[in-house]
Image 1 (cartoon, rainbow, N blue to C red):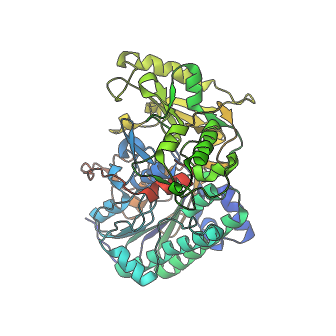
Image 2: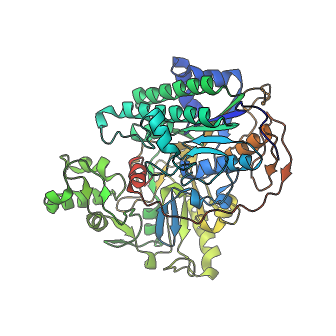
Image 3: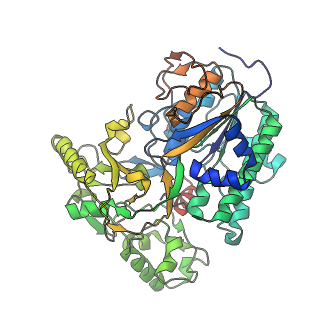
Length: 542
């Protein structure tokens, strides 16, 4: 077993969600991010290819474990059991994250704000979880969040711009500041060998305020300041900057794949049922600001919901879209689930052969007999049906005659491992991610995208410090997010897990590859918190 030999932090990982060159370069040139620019220009840097799907909830577990979703089990913000769903959390991740592996070799870590890390497992160090955690989440060690709050002031997992919409930029800045302040406090207290500090607002600002130059610069300026203060306070030997994917404008149309499947005769829709897409929960949804919905007549609300449904608006982003259909005054904070369900169309499972259950999965689920509760496609017909549908989807074009998909493949092309069965049966990769593929029902097959910005496949990586050979260019290295965990292992002279799908980047001397004991995941628990779902809905993921 390796042991830490001094009190310095050997590697600090800075995670910038959605960071990519097209976003960073203008910020570098305008002087908004001098610290990040120095890190990228003084060391070695290059593109970092994400996975499929390139979305936060699946990509960060892949980066942290070095394994594809077929091994760690997370494909989406949602986990499914038949037609039922839950927001994913750390108990759904069936693979060892890098800080637990380092702990097994005698190295301590401080981890702050990494997505899908709630509830945390025990390891040598401290962890405050990030996205998909509830506010005031369980942390490691127990009670550490209370200590952080006492020492540093308010800590928030999500911006509170919903309470003060005219101060959302300030809320972003405060949220970013919370990350850095908490991380530095924990580093002073635990003196870790490894640090991982993630910033989510570099992604969410593009979903909340797409194309808003002032907001984007404010977020990145705040992040840059926290990175500078963190480097000064912790004095890490090496810094590794990584992102889980990129982001950019959507130039093409929205392709509503469930409508395409309905036209093809493979999907039947219904109103007032329990099918998808209809991400309502056991409680009522916090969707609108104002007085309680019960204090107003239901008639105006029901009429507005029906109009919204007629143009394809289901549960997702109701608050942001009701004024588009003529209901601009506050109509109440809670919209009853029954109204949403009655106004929207859902997949009628017993009469449907295939459907998209969540756009963030980037794929279709075949309603297979014996696997799905109301499966109708026989196992003997599965291969032929899937092959035929794949071939047809590859030929689909936009109204302008452009290909909708860059690739349409069976799931085995992208995933392998014990969780393969949880993957969508058919993976649908949009062309350059300039076509927004959604699960919407109730309108035409093509239309204007609801989200004007969305994720792109290529992120960034930058490495600075004596552990990295900065003479090696990463521009042509073909780096992927699966390579980050093996690279960190090599920086600590820790053996690489043979089950990892990546290799150490050529900037380090790769350590030996060994078989590790099987990872014993915690029993899955429910993410029973409406705040998490509300935030994911605000960002357009639900």
